[in-house]
Amino acid sequence: MSRAALLVLADGRFPAGGHAHSGGAEPAVKAGRIRDAGDLADFCRGRLTTTGLTAAALAAAAARGLDPLELDEAADARTPAPALRAAARRLGRQLMRAARATWPSPELDALAAARPRGAHQPVVLGLTARSAGLTPVDAAHCAAYESVSGPTTAVVRLLGLDPFEATAVLARLAPALDDIAEQAAAHAERAAAEGTGALPAASGPLLDVMAQAHAAWPVRLFAS
Image (cartoon, rainbow, N blue to C red):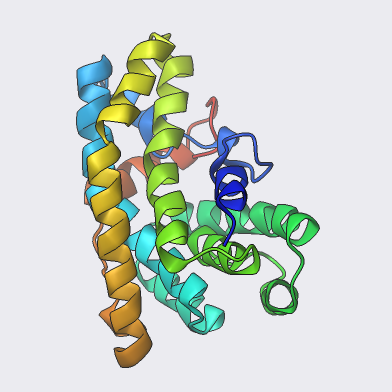
């Protein structure tokens, strides 16, 4: 296992397309739900413990070696908003391009061939972690971190929030991120024995509602 590979995969500069997505922060800012660092912390904690946990478990399961096509179907079932399903597949397609160039593997090639329009991003992330020699917990950490780092970076741009304050929000979430990653890895281990139905299906209904509304905006800064 390479800790350096984990750093590369989790780096916001890894060309996986995440910079174009706000993780629901843009509509939350417009609705007045995120106005400062305190609101951002609340938003990120809610996102982490719902959609973040679900994404982390899917990623951990893919890194654990579960069938990625079954996991992709499980991800679809856990993403009720069409706008978010489309965004997840766009992100998955972009991540797949970067992953195959960085850590080529037959498993990535097979998934790319089976899902030419893109598999769900957490599934691709987990398979990428597996190809890089990382563990399910590592994959879960990446997915959990992405669930909150994207909105945090977006809010700096949307509100002009002090980057130091935004980074402090992420730093204070570190214990919760560790906990979610461990939970996700445990869910993946259970799913290996019981099937994908054992994976969590935590969600944020308001995120789904806002995502659908955001997709119809004629002008927006972020794709989702």
